[in-house]
Amino acid sequence: MTVLFIDKDPQRIDSYVKAVTQSGFQASTVSSGVEGIEKAKLEHPDIIVLGQMLPNMSGNDVLRVLKQTPETSKIPVIMFSYFSGENFVKEAMELGAADYFQKDQVAPEDFVKKLQAVITMYLKGGTGWQDEDASLV
Image 1 (cartoon, rainbow, N blue to C red):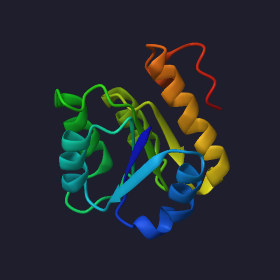
Image 2: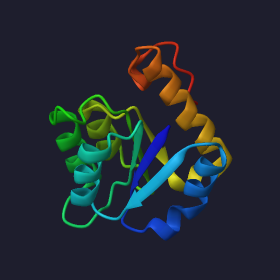
Image 3: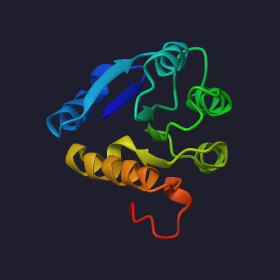
């Protein structure tokens, strides 16, 4: 399984990338939304982890493009940001984010479990956060 991390500062999420790869995933990172969109179109990762604050476009803008692009619309996207304002979260969820986690509130090993739960939900045909039985808390 492959994970694409889109974050303006890949070094700040290095412990999460390492935890994901140590759990058997293949992970790659890019530092802008434009790069992330292009990489997602070309490589079709199994899941995308997307930061909110990116150069030139917000994470929600990237999410909007990913969900409106046929090649990437079905890829689950987890928003992963220090920003947790109600408007950011609400908009991301309305745009189709599978979940929204705050970087400073999830340990790397717990993040891997949440990532696996989202992937499992999607493999079962669900849409992650929208399913009543999704236990991602």
